[in-house]
Image (cartoon, rainbow, N blue to C red; front, side, top):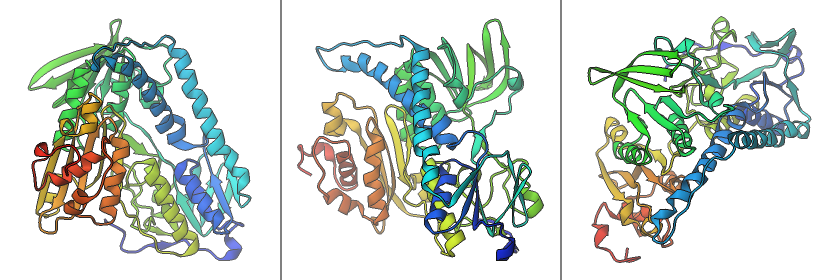
Length: 482
C-alpha cells in the first residue's frame, strides 16, 4: 500500500494536550470501539460526534435493513410452505406504516441501549456534539472549541452516493436509508446497483409485494464467485425479480407515469418505469471539509483515508478506522480496526490489521457468505489452485428442507492441500461460514476438513462434503458414510 515517504509528526508535549490523551472523531461502531478501548487503558478520551449517535449500522444500516428483511422472509415463507406436500400458506403486508414504525422502535431501543446508555459507564470518555470537526495540528476544532491531544482517531464513516446518470439529481432518487422510511408501500421499484445492499433490499421489497427491477452494469453480486452469482440470479428470477445486467446507463426522468430509466443493453436502448428509483450503487467516505489536506492526511481518489497495517494515516499520531478508510466496509471490521488503532495509539503497541480470515455475508435468501480467496483471486496471486463444488442437492439437510437452492465452493492450494477460501449460497449460509473461517484461521487442509466429524442433517455438513469432493464423488456415498 502506498504511504508517504515521510510522516509529519504531530506529537505534542503534556502541557499542550488540553487534558485528553486521545480524540476520537465519530460516534458510530468504530468510534465507540476506539473510545472504550482508550478508556479501558486508563486514558482520557474526547469522543466527538456529529448528528445522531450510533452511526450507520444501528441507525440506517444493519439493524433496520435486517429487521425488514426478516419481516419479508416471514411473508415469503408462508407461501413457500407449498414446498411440502399437503401444505399451503399465505401472508401479506397488512399495514406498511406499522411495520416501518416497529423497525424505527427497534432502532431507537438499540441506539439508546448500546450507545447512549453506555457513555455514563465510562467516566474517562467525554462525549462532545457541538458540530462538525476539523483537524488542526495537535488536535481538532469542534464548533468554537479547540480540543488538544497527542493522538487522534478518525472514524467518521461513509454515506450513500448517486451514480453518474443524466437526470438522476432531479428525480428524487431513494437510497438505502430513505427507502426504509417510505410512508406508503410502492407498487414498483427500480434498483440501481447489484452489490450486497442492492441484492438484499431488492429481494426484501419484492417479497413485500413490490414489482422489482434490479439493474447493474455487470452482474448480480460482482464480488462473488460466478457460480454463486448465477445461483442467486436464478433464485431471484424464480421469485419474479427482473434482472437487467451487462449494460450502461443513459438517462433517467420523472413524469406522471413515475420514474423512467433508459439503459443501453447489447447496443439497444431499454426503458424501465417504476414508482421510484433506488440507488444502491456505492458509498463515499465522510472526509469533506475536515481539513485533511491542510495537515497532510493522504486520501485516495474516492476521498477515503489511506491507512497502514497499524491503522495509522500518513501523519504520525493520526489514525483512522471504519468506512472512512480504504479498508473493508463492514461494521465488525470497523470496530476491529478501531480497537487496533486505539491500542497502537495510546499504548504504543504494534497490532496489525489482518483480514485473511474475514467472513462476509449477504442476507439474501438463499444467503451468500464467503471467507478468504476466491478462485480468480488465488490464481491472480500466482497460486496453483484446485476447487470443489457441491450443489445443495447433495446435502441431506437441504433435501429434508425441500430447498436445494445453492451450492458450496472451496478453493485450496494444490501442492499443500491447504484451504485458501470458500463461498456458500444456502438458506443457512450466514451461520455455516464461521466453521470455514476457523478452518482457514488455523490452516486446515481439505483432507483434515473432510475427516472432521460434523452433525448429520445440518447445512454445515456441506463443508465436509465439499472437502471430500476434492478426492471423491460424494453422490456415491450413503448417508453419514463419509
